[in-house]
Length: 573
Image (cartoon, rainbow, N blue to C red; front, side):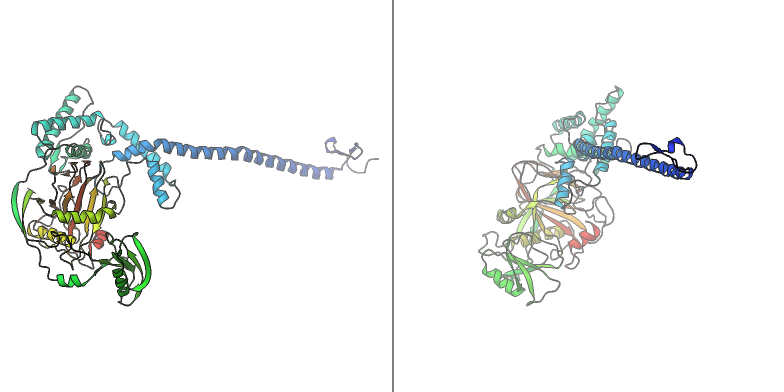
């Protein structure tokens, strides 16, 4: 019998346990309907959310994975193109660190691994897109820019430069100097004019050029190829054996070495003290001891060549953590570090032990900025001593800022003069270099001693080792500032059998050195202005044999307290 109450709609009937419909009153029906509606909505919403999650999450994951895979594929496929673009960028100075001998991805990976970080840079996609955009831009302007083809010697536009260089070399007999450069430029301009009149684009795009220093007469469309042409002329000249530039005149320099008045003191002292560290490696052992104890301990070890320690203050009996070294070559810096070098032991070579007065022949290759070539500047015994001393300790050469660059392919290490020992080979070489700078080149304010840069020994031993065009100091004009580099000198102890010349890339001077010669050039002018580009130079690729040079950079206004590192850090040069 049905319960009392309002009649229920059939839809609100609920199945009873016995299978017969169970009637509900209207109030209950309304409540039930509301709950049912809410439940259905909740179910539908949750189902929809679930559907969205099920559908979207895998899609998002797949999309994300695909995106990352696409980025990796884009990066890997763009690697050579991006690398090509980096190769294409002309060098403006020696501080541009390029890695054109490796694909971009490999270079980036190695760099980040060396930093102990992830091998994938965060900006990889952005870098790739920029590189691809630049690559496409250059491809659209092939007729007006050679930068893209900088390292593709088989490109027809580059062939035009080679053809003009060869023709002018046959006409003049040399591949350097204003005459040869002017001949090449004129030939290329004529080819360009003829090609344009015929509606062709098989020419080297060029605008009229200045010769001293080399560059476009005016900036504008086509001027960007001047930098590429400079490098191409350098490459051509570097591979031509033409004897190099001739001197404008010759002079004789009388070298008078300083008296070794402190020789007796030097003989009594077994060690010389300097600020800075000795290089890492070559460790014999380390121990806690005072400086005096360390000198005594090192003196008793046959293989000990010096020791180094770090301390904010020094006192003869103060104990430090001392590192004993089997080599004292190289080093530098400060940072609270100190070191002692052991003086050379045993009898010196006969010609190395004394420095006799000499009359040296000097070729003046250019008056201003000055370029001199000094014959027989070093003795063979001095060269043998320095090469034997440095080559075992050398590492890859670096550019400004301390990074390894493909623009500089060689090995190097620093040699430190001991100005308390006038018989030391490196001291004698430094004295001679600075005396020449004062007495012949006219840099009378220069003085050697504490604060000046060490002599940098550089070794070019592999085929193709070179140093691309660069400036040692300021070469864009401007006023001289105290403490910056003003001149350089290179002493050639070993020269390549083929290649390895020194070429001034914006003035087309070419030096084909002989063993024991010294090349000196200055970039501070007599009016206190700096060079505007004429001293930019390059070490040509070595094609046969090996080359070893001792490089000295000169600075005015240097003191032991404000040394070359202080000015390199504060003035960037």
